[in-house]
Image (tube, rainbow over all chains, first blue to last red; front, side, top):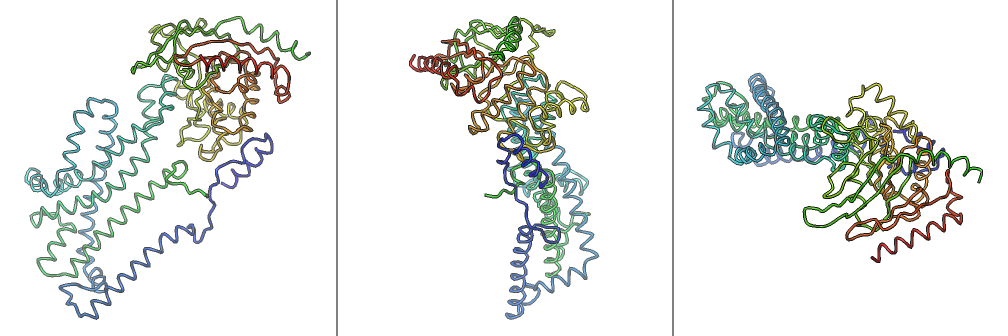
Length: 295
Length: 270
């Protein structure tokens, strides 16, 4: 960025134009490879979290709440360590279902949205059903899917996919349709084919919208996987985190239940952070959402 | 005056061939508004012409029809010197510069300028070389890899002009390209546009609502009136090229501005 500003100055002395009017892009102070504001963004929620956990531990200890009603964070943490063997296996299964469902949502949601924007009739005829699929509570249709599909893993995958795919579909359709009107005219003017317009204009224009949808879908895929597994219950041969929560509930192993719950939340946070990072890396050079300006 | 003699023969020689003929063109929008009616207009090769008129007089509509963005409701737009494709459509050799720079925000300046060539399936290496040359010609040789958001308004417009010129079009259509820029940037871009025109000799049809800009830039000013949009005057400005800042204070400039302003007042009154 510094090099560019130097160029800008040189340019302006050369031809006396408005090169000095370059938008001011903030060059921030860095500490351990990260911007100072990034550190603030990380530290503030961490401090709040620690305070809440401390308060929780204190209340449990002070009021002598039995651990089978509400275990303190420290006991949950210890359970997490001792039960890591079983729990990590379950985490892996849940993450696999989530990941595969998200992948299917990206592929099918992306593909369908491209098809919909290429053919209005396809969109008119199919989009309402996508909405119906979205507004039908997954808890209500999960039992049916589990009955219809013999393979448990596949049925869980389908449930998670149903929940995850709509935000990607609707956001990408919005993005594909929101290319600058003048740019569309420009492509017409140069006789661009449908494919060229899609590749060079509509797809890049849709990228920020798609990534927004992806961030929502990441969390939803995890929720879908967990909910479906709850419905499948002990009937499921695959034993993901939801199954561990149910199992621990039946056995009144409340700290273990909390540990599994913490793992679900942790997985959700990690998925969100990873998708946010991908989004930032893809958009940082050009999109307004990834730019910080001084004024 | 010596300068005038040096430049005029070239201009006269290039004025021979008509590259664009607009005959009785009208445009009625689907809501019934008659945007343009009975427009006749000829453009000669190498000519710099302006379309001047109050807002809503259909100058942009006319320009877009000439570009092939929307067909006229009546009349013909013909390209006497242009080949036709297998469907009998004229292979318009035109470029368009919009009021906004209209760049792809996800692409660098170089990539933006390469676009028309990529769409015409020019090999990438060759397209990049031509884009670099076009950017150098508008004074942005050191900004090849800058993204639009890293550029100022005037620089974005330069990228837009480079993109329009990279295909070496016969006609450059410009739709109030500098209207959103500050006065100083605008004058600088006016001068640079004239310099590019003097060097490359494309034909320009320049839409503006500024009397001063049209007189400074063009050899010919076509004045339009609104409701319905039509041509009411065609004024030649005979001052020689190259023109520079001293032209702005010359009596010829003032005289032309007076004539054109009077026509514009007629246009508004009618």
